[in-house]
Length: 205
Length: 205
Image (cartoon, rainbow over all chains, first blue to last red; front, side, top):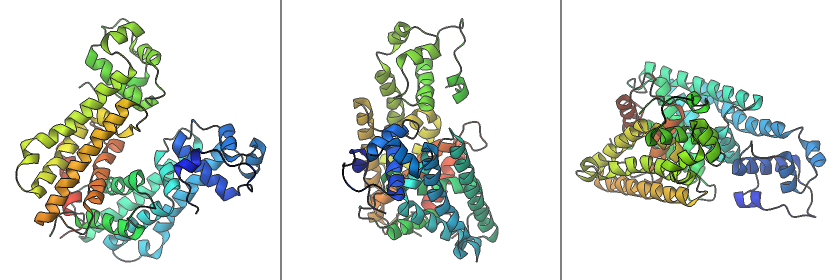
């Protein structure tokens, strides 16, 4: 995906350049939603940012909520996709948990703006409430994996499984606050750091 | 501090009851800032929520920004206070790091609305930028502690100290998203869970 920085999202689109395709409109809209807030963004201001008429924008997306829905699908589909990969379904629960954590970091890095938007959703519309429901279902599945790993003895049993899941994803999700794809830390290294801290702990053994 | 729920923050204050003192005004204002957003809250709407005239409100606080500053001081003062306690200054770096993590969870639980507000600050005013500067200084001091613990060999050296600090506080700060003082998990237990996950890891040894 093209590198669309916050600065680019705020700068007015240059007139006279070829029109955006559907994907580019989506990506720019997501950056505007993140910068200005979804509720505070009007279709008019989005169209102005894109240098499009409202009707040209409506040619690609039915409504602001439609744009939000497609954007959240990108993040949620990515996360749910991890759960259906063989590494998340086959083998011991501790191994599967590690696979899902690593996969979640990969999705977060690959789809950084989409996941950032997902994490800001507060449930003010049907699309947002559906997204929150899917996030809860994802967390619920991971919590089940933590519990199974506790039962098989590969994950410590003295931390409640749902608290452990919240702490794990608190750590993973916080990455959106500071990770930039242009920084020194690559996705693989970041995933490895999360695994080190979350699964093996910071303390030397 | 009285239990002020989000619902209570939204409900209009009951008329005819004794006036709020400065502390109560501060706590209600913080809940309104969290619920509605600081930028979206006007002094008029705050005064209406409190059942006070604007001049009565100005008797206690000079401005909306003054309220914000006092609220952020409560959170930052608490966190900085941990760093100046003997447990954070004496002994090995690994021990001091553990003390600070535990202390940060304690401050977060004790001052939940104030820390929640602090974590939402984005730097749109001088008061907010000063708060962000103090958060950075706090993080910087903890990063130094992580680095010292790596040098003494008590914290693994294969994760960059500043990445480790961000992951640790990503985990700690995420607690504001779900922790409720009325829930089954007490502050001491929560701190112990954070220590277990962050320092010793979820994986059984």
